Image 1 (cartoon, rainbow, N blue to C red):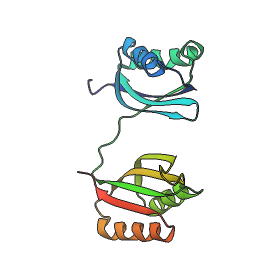
Image 2 (image 1 turned 90 degrees about the horizontal axis):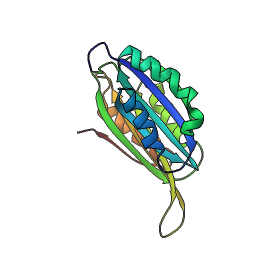
Image 3 (image 1 turned 135 degrees about the vertical axis):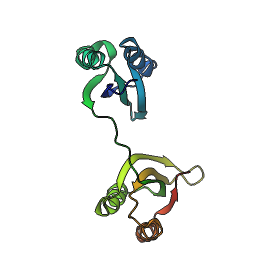
Length: 177
């Protein structure tokens, strides 16, 4: 897409059923827009989509106006918002993985630790599940963060792993390759 491309974030939620991703992605394609990034997940009985699309200002505006009006036909609750392209970040990407027995507050504790140090979270995924042999409920989260150049990664990693040890969380903190 040309430099003058306009960006639109689409969020949609609806009762899970086959064809939701197809229906929305086809609508984006029909509007002559390009999907740059997306996340789709089944959460309980609901299917959620978060999508970044780009195209001409006219095509983006037309889709942003049409999708909320087509909620019933799509079977989704839809919200659209124009956005600026992501700024290029000169930081260093790191992947954090945490696993533990599931209990409230894990995400809040991890995100607070990072926020207090000015670390931006680019992606956060969580999942709870039952361990195969014991049936214990486990929780796992994967975060991708971007460390500013001035942050000493080894020191931050040590502090983060100490924080996780205090909470009885098993964690890794590694550079993205």
